[in-house]
Length: 308
Image 1 (tube, rainbow, N blue to C red):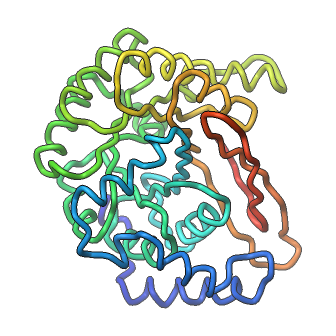
Image 2 (image 1 turned 90 degrees about the vertical axis):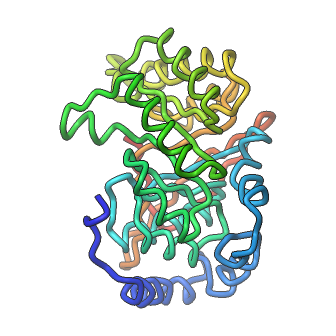
Image 3 (image 1 turned 90 degrees about the horizontal axis):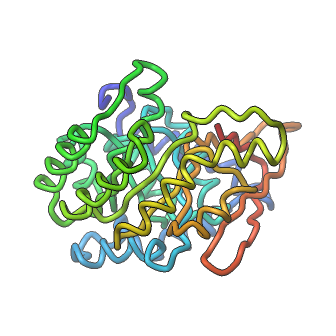
């Protein structure tokens, strides 16, 4: 997967500058001043001397306060322009974390664009080493949906445990999130989550959107779509002490239910957020950022969000 992108650091820097140029000229999009101010916040990009404990606190603080909202660009998405758009939109929209593909160049780019904690996803433990060295704040074994579709791959509990053990051995101090596959029975998901917690995993993520095929339209269909991941979040959050991230199949209607079920955060799985620079392609999307006590709707301008 690391070979999927051929852009080098200089080309990334050049492209990111060209992409940011139109933003600074628009009143509705983040200006250069806005981004520069953001980069002065607590970020590994600006503070390479942060201790491991400080980086962990930075990555986990919104999970601890039960208000985490993570936006993913895609585990196999190495398109620089696409990832740039997602990262900028995530920060402007009020996300607490961004999750990108496992690439050193993409990590460096993301750290230039945002002050948010940067998470990197992969299913190859060794691939995490260079991206953490490059400044990624946390790593995740997960985002299996693309494998379900492309190769019909099914992850067994033993396989997930092995990946977690390998990753923890390689990166003993790095924040580690692991997704519990929805292909397991619910009791098996709970058991796996407990084992992962014992192994030193910091965050458990649920999934389930691809296992649900709603038969009703509208709100009822949204409820049906979210049922598997909500059930997993409810059961797992009562079995472990570490934060649970609820993902896959959620919408603005059902995301509040994730917090009621015990989740510490929500995750827009396979969310494709594109800034549309061309005149005429303007849309406004409201994304619900939820905390344990309230819902605030954040305004994301000039972008389209597709939640699959």
